[in-house]
Image (tube, rainbow, N blue to C red; front, top):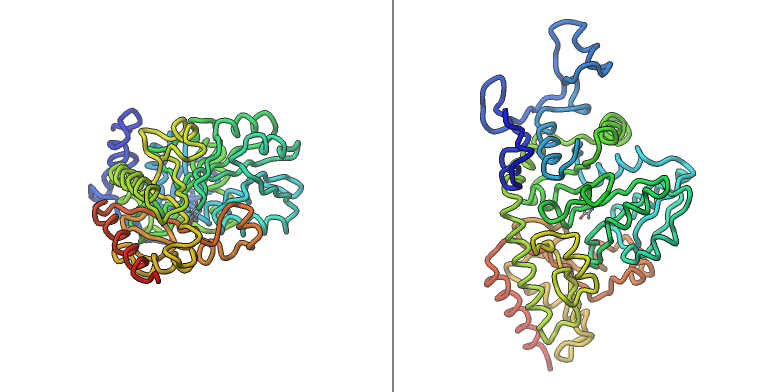
Length: 408
Ligand SMILES: *Cc1c(COP(=O)(O)O)cnc(C)c1O
């Protein structure tokens, strides 16, 4: 049987990891909606529980639908193995609680997905030391790397500042000491970015976003060496967080992954066109998007993100006053008057979403931390969908016209 490991990306996304159902020859991967599995005799489960043979015992340990998803993601990431979880936070907590012990130091970003920031602040309760620093600055990372640093944890591009971190640099630094590099690649899934190729030990994603792609299934996945993934699967996901992927969500994510390359192409093309449109708009102060030449790390983006694809998320700030209206009020007017584009958290869906970071996704982060991380009160994050670009631009045009009509 072809294992699809040598095929090109789109072919792997469609066929990889899948096989027709051995019992029925059903072509699509069935949803094995079961909690438990039964055995022909008593010796069978003993061998599985001892780890002598692979097999299914209980869905918290492994399930055929989610195991197929593990295999497909491994092929897409170029990883030896992967394990899925019920959510992005499920896989992040499973991973961190598996890797870290009291007394260890975690070196991470001051601009994290807010759920990860809350988790890491809680790790401090267990005697883990955490530093939150500007990981877009290599000198800063090197300065804060310590003998007891066991994990460097980064998001690139970061949320919602779209700052980048040099993956290769972090991997070399981690391995010069006793640390592992973990990359949250949610904002730039393959085929855009391959952190493992650049030396990262683990790459993880909230599959809720681009990987499943339709905003209808929570999920998370981590990929890396067979040895590390085995520890996260058998201890982290199974016992510590107890958060395996549900068979139904694994099915939806498998389905979504088949169109990942098609969707990413459209997300990225639309995002680039909108970033350019907004950058040239007189009401807009600044646009943050790694694909723009004005992005301070555009050279790094070209190096570690592939095929001129820079992801489907951008953020922007309006001017301090727009047509005599205070910038924050203008933000609200703009967001409230968009018709196709909805107000909502999340990203990576076929449907475009805007959100106001300060009052929505980053409302759990203190104002000082938020401002220090470069997230202002007038920052809007735009998760660009796959709609026709002409309609997205027209939606902004009509909303900007409403702001103009309110000026005095
Ligand atoms: C959404 C998100 C997460 C958390 O994922 P859930 O599936 O919502 O639990 C983690 N990291 C990033 C960058 C995200 O965008």
